[in-house]
Image (cartoon, rainbow, N blue to C red; front, side):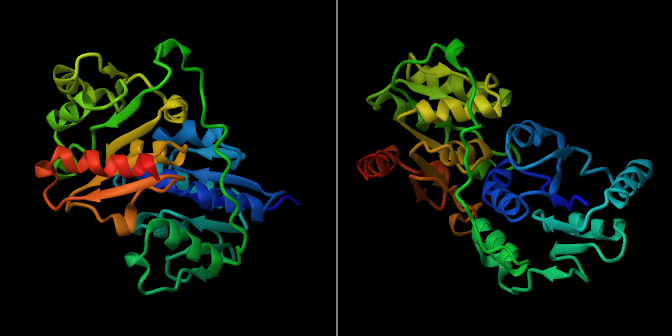
Length: 305
């Protein structure tokens, strides 16, 4: 009988990217299992392209007030035939989902009564990647192969990008303006780069790209034009990137692009910094006042490393 495994990872993009390693480790530990990912619609593209899952469920976050949707999710989980669940979201919401399953289903996470709890009282003070690795180790997983991200690619010939260019990621959560280095500063940085600048982000960042281009004519605006796979392809072809602590920056760094990440006081790089083959962090308590000269110095160090 085929073993059935459920993995829960609902959001957000940066957290989803930082789960690539755990996803790969779970697949390596259960090579013949049928593995289902419970997630939300924004991450279906990434999950479907990856080699780690056999099925993708995107109904992982129904409103608590939507009783029919909750009932459908509970029935789906109960009838899934799962023998083990890896809850990589480890939120109060995902922990409650344990109640949807029959007795005897193994659970890795922080839910009350979990068979394989992440029993470290200091887990909230660990970087996401180390925390998830320790969680899986406590569930019996010992091998953590580097995740193969060759699938994170797409045809980007239609963008007509120059042979060499620098990526700028000026966006961040609209509700947390303190995580954004001002677009005008990005524009000033772009003026002094030895390469053309390419701005990436969602459609809402188009105004930021316009502000950068106003300072640095010739800037290429790709905001709202890249799927996640295309963003990975652009990252692989870029010479380097500079960005705020935001999901696309995590993906660009994971794809292998040398990346400088700018942090203010609203997030702690010790807990959530992007990871990749070549990542540097520059933190300034009040990000809006971070001087362009400091960024240029940190970027020069990253490129020289």
